[in-house]
Every structure is written in C-alpha cells, then in structure tokens.
Length: 313
Image 1 (tube, helix red, strand yellow):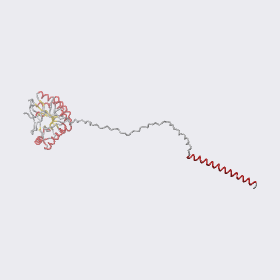
Image 2 (tube, helix red, strand yellow; image 1 turned 180 degrees about the vertical axis):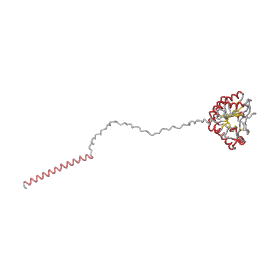
Image 3 (cartoon, one colour; image 1 turned 135 degrees about the vertical axis):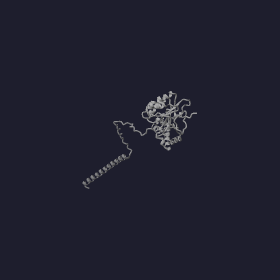
Image 4 (cartoon, helix red, strand yellow; image 1 turned 30 degrees about the horizontal axis):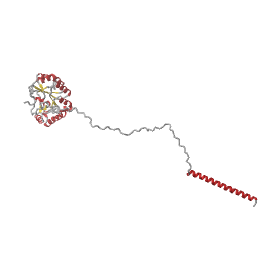
C-alpha cells in the first residue's frame, strides 16, 4: 500500500472517530435535555415562588354601609274603636209636653161657640186662642208675651204651615200650649165631601204628631168658620168637635188696629167666651198685653180650650 493511501485511511478513520465522538456527545446532550424536560413536566422540582399580586389601594375607601332602600312596609291602619261616633240628636223632635192637667174633653157632634163660664174654683174664665199662619217671627213674639203673663192656651195648626215651619210648631209645644186642627189647605169646608174633609183632618193630625208629638184632637176649627152637615158629621166621626168662636178679634179686616182688637176682645168681655185671632200681624202683638192685663184686672183666668170645655160636675 502506498503511502498516499495509508494517509487517506487515517483521515477517514479520524473522521469516523470524530463523527462517533460527536454522535456520543450529541446523544448525551439529547439525554440531558430529555431529563430536564421530564423534570419540568412532572418531576419533583420545587414550585417557583410566585410574587403576590400587589394590593390595590383605592383612592377613596368604599363605605361598608349601603344607602338604605325604603321598605314597602305599609302604614298600620288604626284598629276601629268599639265606641261609634256620636250621632247628633235631631233638634226637631222635642219631648212631647204632657197634656193639660184637666185632660181633653170628649168629642161632640155639636158646634161649640162658648165654654164654661167659670173654673172649678168659681173664677170667671175666657179662652183667647190663635189660628196659626204667616211668618213665625210674629208667633215668637206672641209666645213671649204669653210666657210673661203665665198664660197657656190653644193654637189651631194648619198642616201646610207645620210642614213649612216645623221648628215653630215645636216651639209652641215647648212653651206648654195645646194644639188644635185647622185643616191642611185652609179651604172652605162647607163645599167639601166627606172624603176631602177626612184627608184634610187626618193629614194635619199626622204631621202635627210627627213634628211635635202632640195630638190635635178633639179640637177642630174650620177655616173662616165654614162648615156643613157633612163636615160636622165627618169631623165628629174622626174624633173632633167643631169649635167656632164667641167673638173674633177681626184683625184681618181692612183698617184694623191694636185698638180695634182691644175693643173686639175685651170690649166683649163675657165669662166662658171663646175669642180667636191669628199669629201674622204686628197689631196683634201690640194689642195682646193690654187685653191680657184688662181681663186679669177683672179677675178672669185665661185658659186653654181643654180647660174651658172640660166637663164639670
């Protein structure tokens, strides 16, 4: 073998040794890398220390108490009390005034023009009664005068008037006076049928009792003194005596004055006389004190219809 060929073989051998050595080195590096990878993936290598995240410090510390939210709790409704609200007692129903001590006489089928001349004690007596009509203001003045002189008498009530002025009707009863029936419409009874008379008297009686608690029986004075056999019989069947008058004040006549009233009443002084007038003229108010004083000065008792018509033994 030539020297040149031996040199080529030595070079190739060196290359092979170098390549073998390099391969072993490369293999070792690969194994080392594999070990490192295995350790990183599942080995027992210590966990790396993780720095805690920095705590953020807010500029303004939040409050721990939230803004209160209104609740929907309903307002408690007060429990109803057991005591009911007081209901005002109506003033238009006064306690009925007891009947006069002498009572009411029984009804009579006869027309009455005059009463008993004396009281049970023997004193002369008269009755001045009133047919109620007109503005109650005049009536109140008359009631005051009667109170002043201590007189109780009889007021004949018209149904329509009582309906219009119930308080005034009650006031008559409160002052201690008795009531009679003067019809509902103030029409002429001499022209009425029995049915019409019945309605007039019964309607008036009903409203008077409702408003005042007092009956009008047995006193009936027909308007204008008008009557007929039919009206007399019908009134009696209903429990009424038809009462007219002995003398009238005639204050309704044209030209009447307080003096003419005085003359027509006291000027016709008579024991047992029934005088009548109304409640709607100032001249009546003006004349009444003088008339009363004149009778009383003569010893007369001024009484109710019930007293002067009472049955005496």
